[in-house]
Length: 336
Image (cartoon, rainbow, N blue to C red):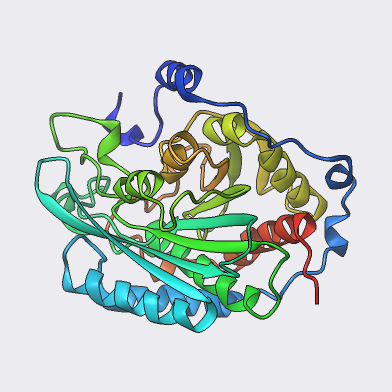
């Protein structure tokens, strides 16, 4: 496998993996879901400027790399913010090793809305930023930290803004906002080895040790790199295999809302991301909304020192939120 394709598992390997481990999910569309007019679904108002402010706040701490002071300050700040909007906030510390055996401490953060509701939905993202800018065009920067505006901060900001607005107009389901840590610390390109499971340490841990015993959810949605300019979201193989019904609904909602040119109904290769472990281990059908450029690795500034605030699009954040909110509230309408 080419090192630049670290998230693209070989199709053969993934197919074998899915054949061994995939269980049939109860994730089919009902007749009422197929006939939904998503333009008429009542949803809370997403404020893109507010989401951008949460990206800016994370960036002000500095790179959120394992063990760094910026990582600790940012994690504490996320907990404080989520306590404003959620009924319960769980902090899940865990210990692991990085790809080279270096010990690392991670921290998953879970904000729960309506924690006593039996039926639940997971909205998730990773909040760490990468230790190594190993995709930077300047080789001298390959050991520098990635700022992580899109790859990290955008997903976390999406969760925070969604929690803020859904708190005032909750859907008829419990919602858990899960911030995974240590997603982006897998083997760098300059290393002489490769292993899939060096990525997504936080979701691997959470899938095995959920924040509530016996926790499950109807489905989940993962946000990754959701503030890029020229957004392009395709139906990647892991999402289509484990969560086919939800994948169809999200892309159907996008087309109905006029975003069919952004949410493209195109099957694409599997991507190694946090949703793989949520699907495989936790047995929760989860879809990955992740930037998937047609001509390059995700987006031009992926895993470089230029993944910064200059390349954040408020409109992209608003588009993704509109699709997700319309889908979620069509499934679970607000009940005053």
